Image (cartoon, rainbow, N blue to C red; front, side):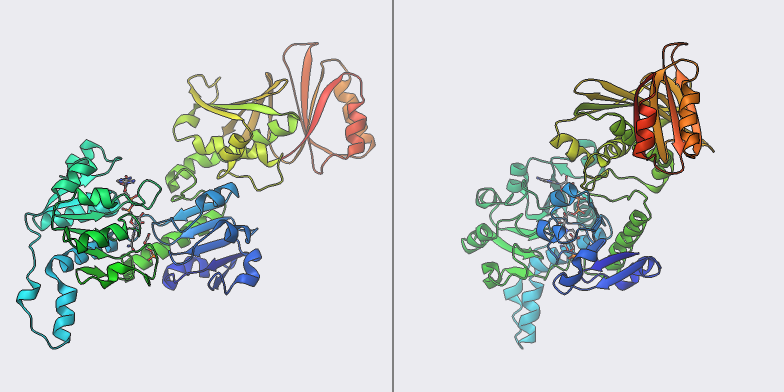
Length: 524
Ligand SMILES: NC(=O)c1ccc[n+]([C@@H]2O[C@H](COP(=O)([O-])OP(=O)(O)OC[C@H]3O[C@@H](n4cnc5c(N)ncnc54)[C@H](O)[C@@H]3O)[C@@H](O)[C@H]2O)c1
Ligand SMILES: O=C(O)[C@H](O)COP(=O)(O)O
């Protein structure tokens, strides 16, 4: 049974898949209202109103996923979530059109003074010349941040006869050409645009991107819009330059402080504002609620999500391809960890055959999480696996090889420890399942599952029989047994599986036999 806290106003119709699940209880309360039950919460759903701090995350020990019903994740401490192995997902395109349309409505309102004229008429005035506006036609629109929303605004602006200038360090010139926009440096955009609108996320790089110095580079009489995040345009600097007459006016949907109770921009007639309404349409709210509900459901079913902020994106089709290898690599990591009781320096994974036909980084993360999960008593998964390795100074390598040793797919991991290295190789056989096919150069073939005993011994008649006799005498049932060796009379291995974990007594008895070099219990 999972308990999901819906902490902000998320459209109930979109949450139907969660409401319909008998495995899920939805709790629709703010974080404060739910203070007494935070320790029972498995998943948290928010919009921008709830700030998900490290303290809040730590107050929810069972939390495994945070879903943002919208785009911006600046209200979520993603780093703290990642450290805890909590997946963060958002709904990246559900509100794109609504926000683009809102920005466009704000731009038209700004240059035609519609809010001011509206209030004036409602006050029984009729001041036509006071509200003379400016056409959008043939004006240069500067878009800072040419992503999903920026791109939709560009299309609409072109239909209105505007020339579009763009600044986005991640936009290629080919893409800019395809969008029919002129890709410029920020300085050039600022000096040429008649109207500037920002559509970047709020990050350390974009906070104050349009500060006093940059705003002074704008043409006199420029209009500015911020329907992205409060703080990308410096509010104090804008206030000053509007008073100076350098900037003609501004339209803001978002503010550094929301609601903007102490914001001087609100005192200016030439500034028009809305209360963070970009995504507030029936359509966008249904889209984002549905998207996050589906993601949370998929995640709770143990499948990889598509729109994770702290995991590589995987489509449903890609998941079908990757799924067979998922458990294989996790158990390879866990097997290696239980056969190496020493500090490690490096884990390198090589993929070959069919296992190279997709982005393997998620598999490497899965292998590493399988490794560290058995060693640490903190939650370890694909989200924080790399971070955990990095914090422990373990180097991670990933490569592709053309030789798949005759298997259709083949994954090999080498773990370098302080004193020795451990090599494990596996494959997935259709209609059969995951198989470990080699350990430390010994060919073998076993299903990496359940309670296993790995024994390395001298290849001599009677060893297998003596192991079997001890177990038989104590009525321990051997479920499966696989043996492997490199050469007759040399070193050999056996891997046994049991229905129950092997007791310490049994382990000691077998370990004391002659000819046993070393052995490990493995729980998978
Ligand atoms: N007002 C609202 O209600 C509302 C609604 C949706 C989104 N938003 C905000 O709009 C932002 C953009 O949304 P999107 O869906 O278009 O995101 P997106 O990721 O598709 O686009 C963001 C673009 O910004 C660019 N960028 C990043 N850093 C930059 C920098 N330093 N300078 C210039 N460009 C930079 C990226 O390359 C990307 O192309 C969101 O992060 C969110 O904060 C606001
Ligand atoms: O980032 C977003 O998606 C928007 O800012 C919308 O935020 P909201 O969900 O609080 O309306």
